[in-house]
Length: 145
Length: 342
Image (cartoon, rainbow over all chains, first blue to last red; front, side, top):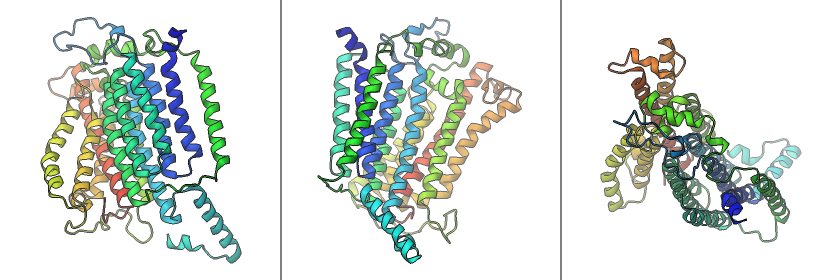
């Protein structure tokens, strides 16, 4: 039983981190909080991939004493799997791009509705729509922006 | 890998993640999220993923936190308290997250045990990368050789994604209407007046910046032999400009390094990458098959040519990443107007 827990507890904690992120994305009212939730969700996925490359007894994926020892055989079990590292390294850099786009959208929404709270924004969108229907004119917020 | 340290860091990560989403102050949430990223970086070092840890330290703990500060600076730091409302949304969110968690927990019974050297992920293609990196490319750091050579296509399009993200930020926040679309004219030229005028901070920034940039160049150039490479070095280079624009003023940076230069550099970076690929094509090999470059690079064999072409590719990546990081920060902090920053 203890062996089973030791073999799997890492995955359980990753799932817990992912659940925190998913909950923040779904249930938080504030847009910045939702974006933070997205970041937490992303790291949970990344950590899962990186842990898939881990090897018990393996060292970091840089060949030891490479120069002058080119003839030596490289033991595969001695080095951690580099492939998940590569995929996740680029994913982290792309995550800063998605973060930038998400924050830019939040800034535009704040500029137009003067709020970051989801329910207030929805209320103001509803008001705008009813104003358009009754008067036929563009809502004031749209003209300002 | 020491499982006690692993468990300790994971516990701290869960605590930080939980605090980030419950704290009522957005600036505080951003700071805790930075700490969360830093703990992630420690965890990856502990797992042996040094390149990933390096990227996380520069991107997650560094630039992301600053981007959150910029966004909070332009909006508000207060989260409105509504104790009674949104009970429905919270229940649905909790139920969905719980359901997802239960399904995944059930799935973990089929996973290979953690850090198993014979897991499927470590037995198919990765042994070829591990044993092949020195005979094929003469690059000891296999993360760099897989990134820039074996899976060069992947990295090229990741760089393109970053460029697209930067352009998207520009389109979302850039001024529309009767202004010129390429906004060199929208840069207000003028003396540095605004900002938090602190002699000590400005002096230290001025002294440190050249060394930081030298370090970034070292990270780019030495990525073949140690953790590092184009992505990490590019983000550090971008961060030095962000540091200058925080400690002085946004104008100090944009006067020297305006948006047009920025976009030009980002495109040049991607062009260097795809240009090296196209050059291989012209020399009669496959796209991004660097061994063909031995014909034109003096003093190289088909093996060392791959190593040198990787350096060229990393430089391209670094240019693109640096320019886009600066572009995103500048636009976020000034709400797209380039008038004043933090």
